[in-house]
Length: 84
Image (cartoon, rainbow, N blue to C red):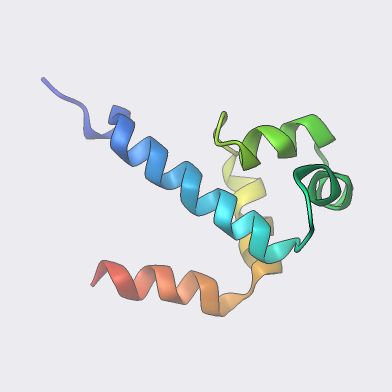
């Protein structure tokens, strides 16, 4: 039986959405610059932020919620509206 939660397509889309959210919350000219600013606020390493920007790992829920709050409610609401 196929598990939709393990779908490569949904994983890729979720990681891309989170990457875009990071760019929105932490505007910068490079991955390094964004990671330098974001890491202390998210209580993670610079390397972890770069991994998220490169879509190599999934963030935990706590981090997603922090970034959503920093990016602004309009980004979150736009995502919810698209699902309808």
